[in-house]
Image (cartoon, rainbow, N blue to C red; front, top):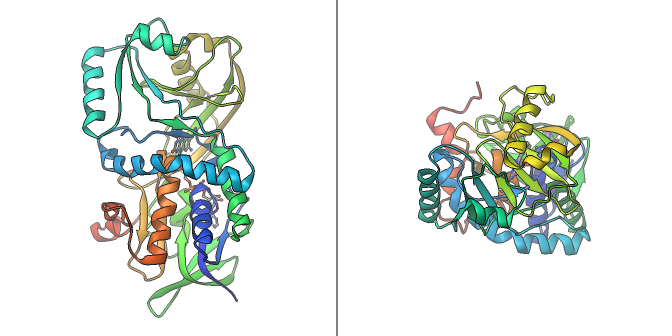
Length: 376
Ligand SMILES: Cc1cc2nc3c(=O)[nH]c(=O)nc-3n(C[C@H](O)[C@H](O)[C@H](O)COP(=O)(O)OP(=O)(O)OC[C@H]3O[C@@H](n4cnc5c(N)ncnc54)[C@H](O)[C@@H]3O)c2cc1C
């Protein structure tokens, strides 16, 4: 039987970032993925790094998001140095476009909400916004600039993390599905992978939206899949510098000139089909916000499955079973939250304490205690 300090289920951005951080701390780490590393949600994402809350339910995540965004420059620099790969990090801010409705009231609410949460947000007139981003529609009424936000090429980042993890000594096993956690004498003692017993002092479940399928993990990680359809555009006559948001869509420019547009949020099980309705919604929103995109070439369409938890907040930390930790449920923010998740899990495993005061609100035990531990 192979023995490790830490066995991780899932080599997406979350599992690989945790493995990398633990290996750098000197632990012997193995990561098992049922496919190739980084072909799940981490590949499919848009790569926006925004700690701003999308709705009231995610306000409690803002401090975690801010902490993770602050770690990003160093995270990227370390990964680029070790992997030798550029990860397309762009610290250029985000612009939220207001196109209709009670614009002045919306503007005041958005700015006040952000300031109340310690996030920088500047109101802009339509003219000032179009000076920054000339591709914005002439129908634009006002905008909010969030200068501290950033984006990253999540596909490149996920590859770089896997390379850096391997170089730091992590053993990455592709094509090795995890079936169950191992339990012995009231503690978790590793994983069952393809029928083989893997022994580890610590076990981390980071299998994204499939985490609840792993026997023994469902009570602590009751996630379900939230499908997101995406489109990559290339435009000769429209250039975009910052991430642009409207009520219906976001546009994320990449260093190679592509503009990634997304995304739908659909609860349709593990289905990853691209649909006419999904693409229509994204394209309508994209052209409404930046009309010149009507002439853009469609380079690629795809869909991915976000790991969503019952309260839409991430699930990070130790469980009631000694030795078992969960790191999933990052929903729409897993790219943003990868560095802080890796840090918290590393801190817990190496010192049994963490630097984030409020991490218990993300505890896997919240579902067990409230009886919401089944994913119906
Ligand atoms: C369309 C879309 C847009 C998004 N945009 C953003 C964004 O702009 N910003 C942001 O921060 N976040 C975004 N997200 C969310 C982000 O992508 C996810 O939260 C994050 O990638 C989750 O990472 P993960 O490693 O947990 O999951 P994944 O990347 O899905 O990785 C899970 C891994 O586990 C493996 N696995 C599954 N089951 C098993 C098993 N039984 N045994 C072994 N391995 C297994 C899978 O093969 C996979 O490699 C987006 C997601 C989508 C789908």
